[in-house]
Amino acid sequence: MRIIPAIDIIEGKCVRLTKGNYASKIIYNENPLEVAKQFEGEGLKYLHLVDLEGARLGHVVNHRILERIAAGTNLRIDFGGGIKTTKDIETVFDYGAHQVCVGSVAIKDEQLFINWLNQYGAEKIILGADFVNRKISITGWQKVTDIDVKDFIQQYEHKGIQYVLCTDVSRDGMLQGPSLDIYDEVLKCTNVKLIASGGISSLDDLKQLKTIGCEAAIVGKALYEGKIKVSEITQLL
Image (tube, rainbow, N blue to C red):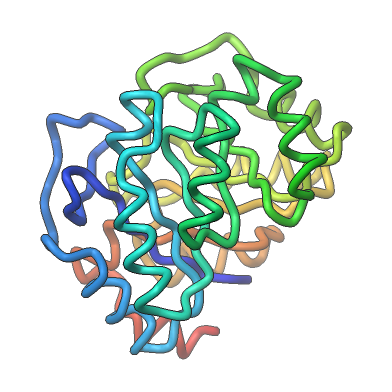
C-alpha cells in the first residue's frame, strides 16, 4: 500500500481544515515546498496536493505552488481542487502534476469527465469520491448530493475509472480513525484502486486499511500533529 502525505494550500500556505470547515484553518507552514522537501528527504515518494481555494472558488488558484514543488522535488504529485475546465486540467499537468483528482465535474458534467478519462488515460485521472453520511459531497465540500458513494464509484468503474480517492468529510481532520466499513464495502463490490482519506490517526489505522485492500492511504493532520512520524511510515513500508 502506498502512503501519501497531504499538503493543503490556502493563500500559498500549508494548512489543515477540520471536517472541511474553512473557518477551522490551521497554518502549519508558510512554505509548502519546504514541507514537501522534508517528506521527500525522509523517504516518501508521493504527495497529495490540494488547492483548497480552487475547490471553493471553482477554478485552479495555486498552480504556482504545484510548479515549485514539482520543480524542487522528485515527488509524484496528485493534484486536486478547482479543476473544472479543460484549461484547468491542462494547466495542472503542464505545471507538473503526475495525476489529477476530479470530483465535482464527474457529477456536474459527466461527458466532460469521460472525455478527460479518454484523452489522458485512466492512469492519470483519479475520481474524487468525497462523502458525508454516504452521500457524495462536491464544490470543496460545500454541497452534499443525494448520490450514494458506492453507487457513484460503481458507475464510474463501468466507464473505465481505475483510481478513486475516497474521503469521509465528517472524519477529515478529526484523528478518530478512517471509515473502514465503507471502504471495505466498496472494495468488496469493485476492482478500483481505492485511495483512503480522512480520519487516519495511527499506524494501526494504516495497517487496517492495507488489510482490507486499499491501494493507498493519504495522511495529513496526523503527520502535522505528530500522531504518526514519517520515520514510522518508512519503516512500515
